[in-house]
Image (cartoon, rainbow, N blue to C red; front, top):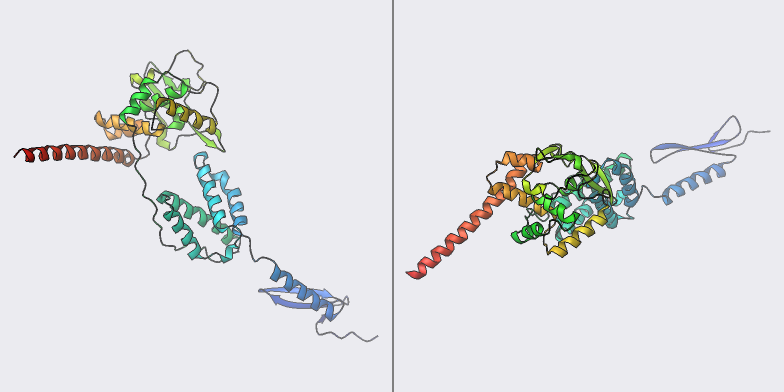
Length: 351
């Protein structure tokens, strides 16, 4: 029996093999005839052409979030998740290798036009870059479209406002109404962050020494309360308590009980609802953080050294405290200017 003829290689086992370099890789197709191996080669190329070259942005973003969320602190969890969802809404079903730097830049500019803050835009760019990094590592793109983009300016950060005199008076008048009113009052006269005050237990209060030990904070992940270290390392501190703050701390409680939440740490939705209810009942225009700034204002007015106030507030740097003090001083100078201007105008009319 004569040997079969073939354009390709005949193996010892009688099979024909067609070899071809496809997309930079050597590929082998086996069969019993030239037509069979040629058909297998055509089918393989057709399948490659029909298959997506890479994942969609949404798929890459989901994988990024699956890995990233375990690294994120509870306080940052919600913000990160919101940004990931925002990017998915923008780029969704697009293949990652088809998204251009111009598209990403346009996306960030749209956020600026909508009035988002500089911080939100900067964080959005960082998260978007992280998602594309995931695709770059997987070999789906050769260049991250976020790289080299010019900065996009968002709305400048607004300084935190302190509660006005009317709100401070209302909190003082209603301090014994409920656990939430006690919480507002305590923040006003200690400057604690909301999460720090929520996580406060009776074992942290020393009435004899008139101090409060801040060593934990409450954050929320998917609305569920989570105990964590304070916002910064300097947040772990012993705070001096003025007599007013001690007024709303009753005696005779279990050391492990939470001072303002005897039934245990609240879910975020429950806490937000209770805060808004008290705000409406007392006629407040400010939420807890504004009273923290009111405490800083009292320290400035009382002539407390910024370094000492930095410790009381748990700021990570003296600059944060000085920013508050500087803002207060500028406001005071503006009041002086207005008074002086009014006086000068009155004197000129008399002439």
